[in-house]
Image 1 (cartoon, rainbow, N blue to C red):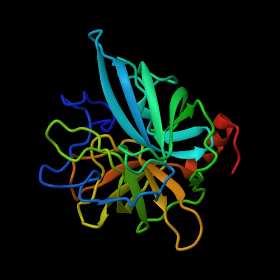
Image 2: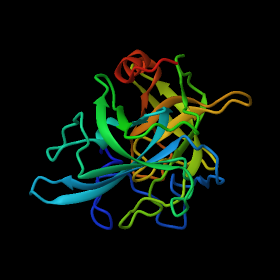
Image 3: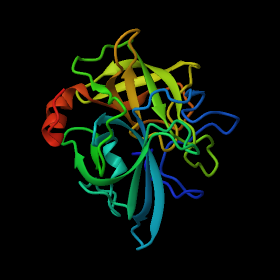
Image 4: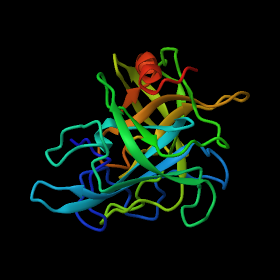
Length: 255
């Protein structure tokens, strides 16, 4: 139905998730993240993406910091004018805002994406940024096979409306539960704060992670594909545990 959460013209037509029309949060029926929490969350802003007719459009994705100079997001966040995933920034400028819960604030860091690596097996991309982030702890990478019934937390900067959706200026969160485990993907459905808590436009690449009572959050999957939101059906998310060796090789960083 979509490779959905990337492509959109801000304030115009969108190939993306569709959010709730009534008062709602980014990540449909989610919650605002308290300032300073989940600082590994990343907003990707793409300005000047080529279109098939020779024009330009703007878009956005979500992601997470997994190493001092690397952001992990959805592979379809980097597609050329023909919709083909590529290993380069496709926009005139791709900006990564890291660790800034409220984008209208001044915390965290702003960097530029300089390079891209595409996973050969699932909808995941690595985006290299032009500075090292040393004061924000990256997400750990999950290595174990996720299990049906596991509850994961999601963060993202997605839209708050289905009419002319635009990215949120505030990081939001919600929880989803694993319903199926496939070779490179997980099926997930809304869990909390509501049964139809689901990703929305511009949440592509947003991290699903285990949040242990003690210890550091572990990245399990990223937003990839699914029905228009909010909904109570399955989301298709891209697994991380099956590509950890590729990630380590691509970025030269070992966990």
